[in-house]
Length: 364
Image (cartoon, rainbow, N blue to C red; front, side, top):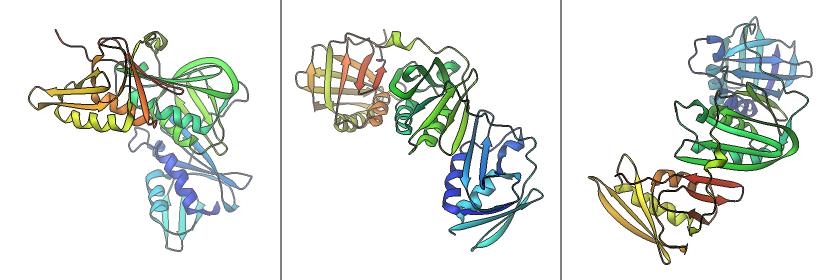
């Protein structure tokens, strides 16, 4: 099999696939990238770690004698990434690849693709279509709230809840919850599933700058497709918490502040918090927000920033890192946080994004 291609385009595709290729695996075949020549003159590059799989159809020049081969992913990616030529040429024969450019000639020993796992195809029915921008936005606003290595496996991912054209992305680590509501362009079947965190990251990378992304949920995996690529991601077994039940309503107290100023103030106050709880106490006083911080040995601090306060008696303690996470995720100049009391969850709403954060309750 022979072909030539743009080095920059191949580098872009390999960058997507290398997010999937495992650096170590009990199955060495998974550390390879499959290159398959197609009858229409394109090639398809594929990678999988069995939890995530991705294949990308790419245009090349002068494809001859289409064939299929596995090449070591890290070495192939390194050669393409570190070259600086515009065009790279491939000559693949008997599972060996000669890779040339104006800068040199290299040989990679590959292997047969007989044992390489197949990646699922997109079905023809029950598929929803969304804009790539909507997916990227939803993932960015939910990824930070997922559990990290939690023994409750249902929290180690992002829930997708599809009901006709409504698509909800939900994540929680029990200390906070993020919910983003989007709308698909086509209605699908009513279904929900938890997609592994790594899979949602790959979906967001794949969807970036894509006009349309097709999505389908099976009993075991998510399948997504763009104009050039198809990916699958394993679903998480387990029952996601009843998230709608924990979203507080009828919150009569609120504080509106400049987002950037609050970020700076929280970072400053966080320097003298307790290393275990990272707790800061936020209190509303007339037209200002007072942030008190203290650590058992590190010291203490007090800062004030202007605020629009609605309601009296607002005084709540939070992990300041959790507050920073959500503030850095949005871009609005002013944000409003709503409260009920010092022991109830606080709520932040911005457009189609809702975030819930649990307070730190005083010990006693």
